[in-house]
Amino acid sequence: MRPVINLGDLIDRTGDADAAMIIGLHSGAEPAILSRAVLDAMADAFARGLLRGGLRRGERVAILSANRPEFIALLLGAMRAGIVPTPVNYKFPAATIRRVLVDCGARLVVCDAARRVQLPVDLPPDLRVANFDAVGENGIGPWLDPGPFDPVDPRPDEMGLLLYTSGSTGRPKGVMLSHASHLWVARTRMAEDDLREDRVLIAAPLYHMNALALALLVCASRATMVLLPQFEARAYIQAISQHRCTWLTAVPPMIAMMLREVDTLAQADLKSVRVVRMGSAPVNDTLALQIRALLPNARIINAYGTTEGGPIVFTHHPNGLPTPIASVGYPHPGISVRLVGPKAPETGVLQIRSPALMLGYHNRPDTPSPITTDGYYDTGDIFRRDEHGFHTVLGRTDDMFVSGGENIFPGEVELVIESHPDVLQACVVPVEDAIKGTKPVAFVVLRPGARGDEAAIKQHVLANAPAYQHPRRVWFLDTMLLASTNKIDRSGLQQKAASEIG
Image (cartoon, rainbow, N blue to C red; front, side, top):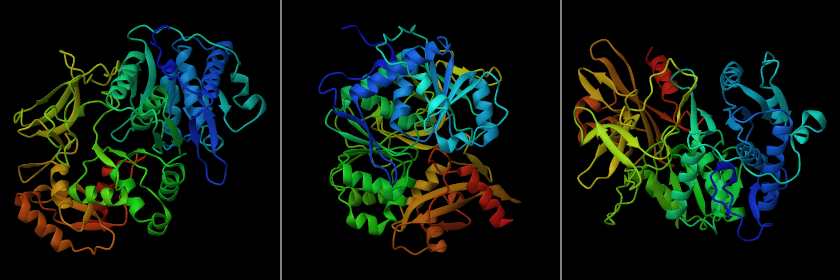
């Protein structure tokens, strides 16, 4: 058997070819089930169809759609043909969607019916459109040419995927990822976790690295993927219960929203879950207790990763020491990690060197490369390392602000606030201050049943952190404001705070 070097060909073909590989859920409809054989055949058909349709190796096909099983098949098929799939964030405004389609040079965009109306009318004249939900010449049928296909052999540095960043700090950047980089990611994760009997629930959008890397891992592991179009708390709870899901990925706001669905939780059986991999924000003591109550048999993994650097950075301690709750772990043996800055090596900006690093940014000569001269990716994320080598995220360099001459890292203050027994989540942002320049304020989501007390939150921080870190105002929210990636929308909360004070 020839070695797999094309990322689109990473499917595990041992075992029953007719067993379900993807179970696609959609409200009010029967599950759409793709076996491994059908997924493989659709991927081959799309690879053949793209080449028959005139696309050439290295060109791009964009996918603008909510999660669905065919999304995975087309993504794999494009890579088999040497075509570069480009999942597009459908929560972008129409002008940004057009900018991404033009920037990546897409020759074809595949969308679903709901996203078809989001496409701007002034698309490039040579950009063709195919609709998952249409029949005839406007559907994907003309782009499927059934039959076997031998995947192309990519060069070591050949781009396999093009993913665009969220654009929260400006124009979205296209991150170029090689076939080799994410084959390494899948194989490394497989060596650490045997998922062959697992049912993995994916509700995060496939245009985001978190969900996409997990979907690829499922294909490579002979696991079963339970796929939701998007995250909705009731549907997520019901999917776990009805399909006996064993592996979840989540972010803290998702858990917070699940906890509010008291009636749905009362009817659900969530004991099947053995792993929940948390990302985007640290898991605090309060949230960990909530997760353990919600998912009593689950092991909690507090994960860290980036689109540019991949999802593998930290792991468990080599001496078996337990990972502190807020920590993302100990550096992975396959990764070189360092902290840089005046307080390094205890505190500083994380830089990593890894086989998963991006090739670079697409078409962005205006953007300085975050890759150092000696091959490290500068993440822009500030970490603290303890005496055992465990690392904890403090925040981004972009988020750090100065108040009265003191540097404030929001993540550090948020961990203190979240240690209050009534608090589930916190977000700290700066607002202008005539004397201090800026000052910290906080938004807080309370545990179910708790009552908000602004003075108590302030006093808790004053008792457990330097006085300059305490939030001068505290606002209570039912749920955190989220960006399109399900991460907390700091920019939106900062604007909200400014309007509340102003």
